[in-house]
Amino acid sequence: MTFRVLIIGGRQRFEYARLRDALDMLLANRLPDVEILTAGGPGVPALAACYARSRSLPFVAIPIDHEQHPATPSNSEMLA
Image 1 (cartoon, one colour):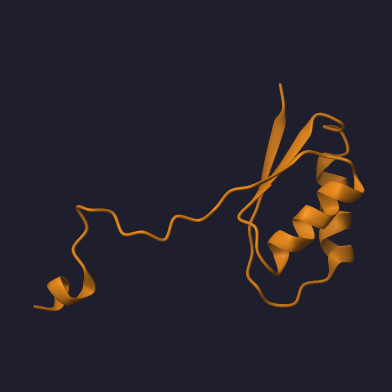
Image 2 (image 1 turned 45 degrees about the horizontal axis):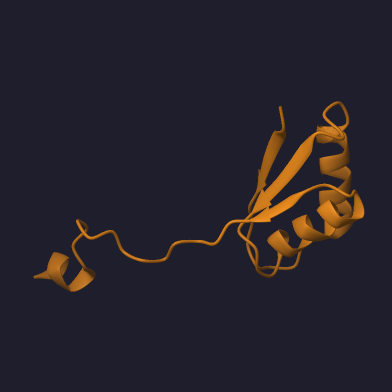
């Protein structure tokens, strides 16, 4: 069974070495059956993709759904 790791984070600057070292330590007993998941984009998600490629691990970028749920009132409706 594949062990999936979801990596999320902001767009701010982050040191790749810190992420790499943390993931190497976390996943040491799980390799090679690991899959990296992230939202894609700049910052930490881009570093997660780089880590997956460097370790020859499967990588899945899950797009973020920014659409508002139909049952949720809009901001203008909430303020009225």
